[in-house]
Length: 362
Image (cartoon, rainbow, N blue to C red; front, side, top):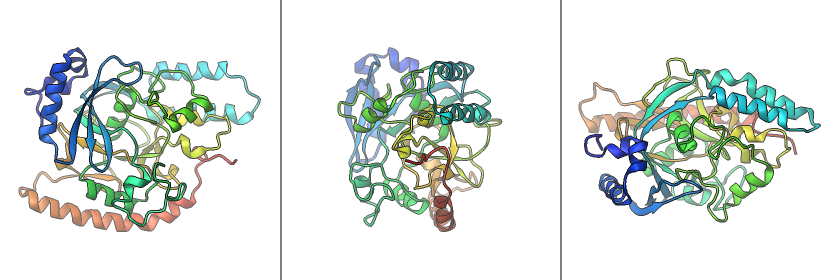
């Protein structure tokens, strides 16, 4: 595990930004030494209009990962973002009644994205893209995506049992909700989207889907945040009161948190699908009616992979009473199988429930 004393720039985004490229490359090689043989350091890259380079690693079976330096951020929907939403509502002129309804629905759910609270996130690696069908076939040879069949480049939509197989196969985990929002914001302070406050039109979303030149990555190199319903390790809570402030998953029971899903609303009706791409928007996993997408994470700081075990899209803290790592791993695998079996029974019911937010009639 990496520690602040040895690599302070990895735990402070400001220090990372002020470091030289030589120092960033040195830190990236330090990270590479902590990773398994399936990871390879690919170099420093700059995305979009960002001025600070990102250290990129290539995983043999998953693809490209961005090294996200740790740091603090205000998690949730800020007053500035609420004002931007209200301003956008006044600026948009459309005749469709459902457009206003989307605004009203979004504003009515602000409580689920509050209270705004300060979170300090340790460094981590995060996949630049959600797992594709082609890559998922390595662990799920019989996969046929409910939306895209076997189109290799399309985003995979997986059920809990399939997600468990991917996590076990890769040795990685789902992102904590705080990690995913922190990575999506890309260092921007209290802005609606990874690129700012401008509402995306259909052409913008189409460009993100096509990604012909890579220009739609955010400052941390994440592609297409908000397009697909990404499952988080956190269980659902209808607010942030008493939420963790260290970037760890907020555990509990029942449903899990999902972020995004705009692409699954195609064809877009021009009535607010963009709200699924907000950095702060969160829903329950019931919104992912065709299955959830996966954006894999490898932790580098306080709560890294050895400390958090994923179970069918959940996260279960390893018991502090466990003194044997071997015993802990055995226990975790048993719990994962039980959770997967239980979760699989409810998949059909979840898929049958149509979400008004994430699916529009053509």
